[in-house]
Image 1 (cartoon, helix red, strand yellow):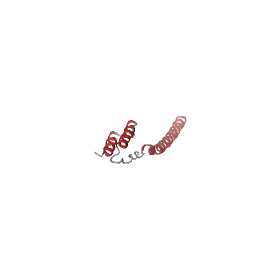
Image 2 (cartoon, rainbow, N blue to C red):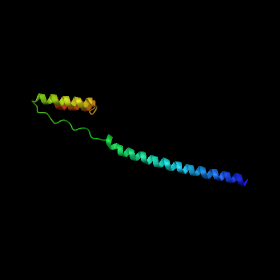
Image 3 (cartoon, one colour):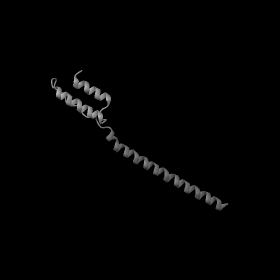
Image 4 (cartoon, rainbow, N blue to C red):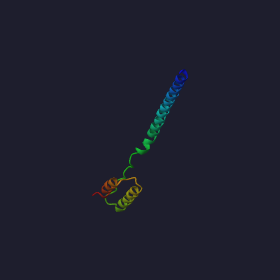
Length: 94
């Protein structure tokens, strides 16, 4: 009986140690993931590009160039459809 009790106690100590180590590793890994997430987040929180400067009212060439630049930004995925439409209206003055 004492041998059996000793074996059960040893198993309990090993299992308890394994659980404690596993929990510590999990907490440390979660901390590292949180730190990496916090470091990468500003990359996604960038401000949208500034709108093109306002065009002179009578300069049609300037308006066309701005619309081309706007189209390029939309094609690159920098501007959404709504942002594109808003800036286009601003340029055309409609």
